[in-house]
Image (cartoon, rainbow, N blue to C red; front, side):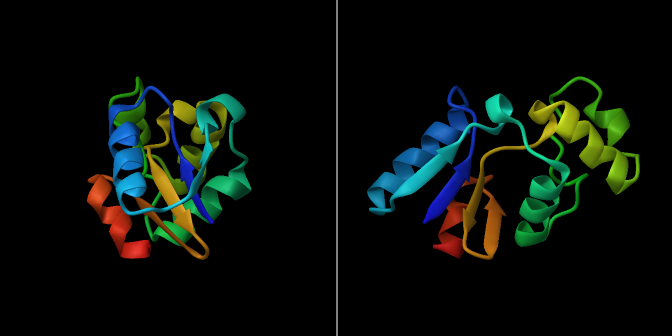
Amino acid sequence: MITVYEKSTCTTCRKLYKLLDAEGVDFEKVQYQVTGLTEGEIRDLLDKAGITPADALRMREDGARELAAEEDDAIIAAMVERPALLQRPIVVNGEKAVLARPVESVLEIL
């Protein structure tokens, strides 16, 4: 099962849904900005995607640019406190994940 960590009002997320639907892929949505994520869940997502916490920072969020210079643990702690700091959408397929920006990058893990 494919899992998409998303925000329902995100334009990129909606583009991703259209692509997955066109590919005939069933997926589950996780609105992480509503439910939140634990430190362990964030670390797992980043490990599966092969990206650093700084790579996953949503730079449009207040304080993200300053946070990018911090150590990984500090960035992850901030993401736990403020889920909006985590870039979206992140798509997980088993032990692999991808930050779907651009959305076509999801094709790598299908």
